[in-house]
Image (tube, rainbow, N blue to C red; front, side):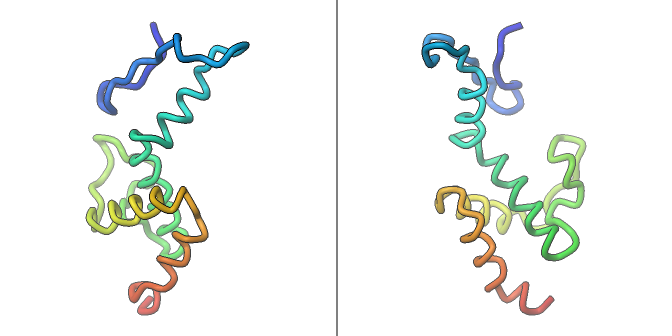
Length: 109
């Protein structure tokens, strides 16, 4: 079996020709995939966890299962917006915290 990403997440295949000298490059490849184009899922999971920490419940109630068997987000547009903002800010947690804490939703809660 070759290293890669499951087809449900895009099916990207590890390219051994692009490795760093002295290592297999597999962990670096995975880290870049998670935080690059495929990182939208990673950002959504993190944003949901942060939301859950502040409000007691995440936008996705099944925080441990974002897959096919998990529940749908209660507000997918907001989750996507916050995840995109998180990525655009360079994965800056402080920026995301400020965005959430300055929102009307937080003030109302």
